[in-house]
Image 1 (cartoon, rainbow, N blue to C red):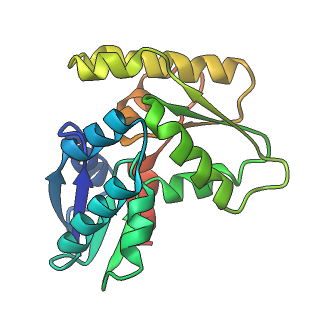
Image 2: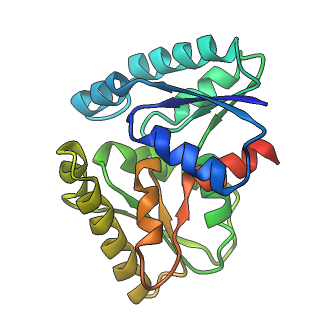
Length: 209
């Protein structure tokens, strides 16, 4: 299968390559396209506008012409995948869809951590749309200061801040901690109190299921 991934951070290419390798997906071909300008535009606009959503959907549609499946890995732009999938000939998937579905099967407190504030609302909307366990209770939290570290190129500091935030939520009684953005994935290896869910693993498993 040829899976084309649309990223908005160059560092996510390695995240998805590593996740694919860990899941034993070497028989599939992964193609990576990075468009940081799309996320930068959303950040500048204070969130995802209709214009940026349409622009992203157009990119996804163009990529779908040479792929068996297209995966949008940016949570801020997630709904553009839903828009593109209406007319695409192949599956266009937002990577955090399966993440939300799995998390909300939890009978208890689910805490979704975001690193950038433009992801808060799209994550809230997505988690509200999926089927949920009657006892599931959702909290969405921003890891303050983490995104500044990411933008400065301090990836180690970024992941450490997220891991610390995840551990703090486990200590406060979270039954499930979710790392809402693909760029946060490495923090799951650094936590001491539990293993958070990550979008690349959930998303790739769902694509191939």
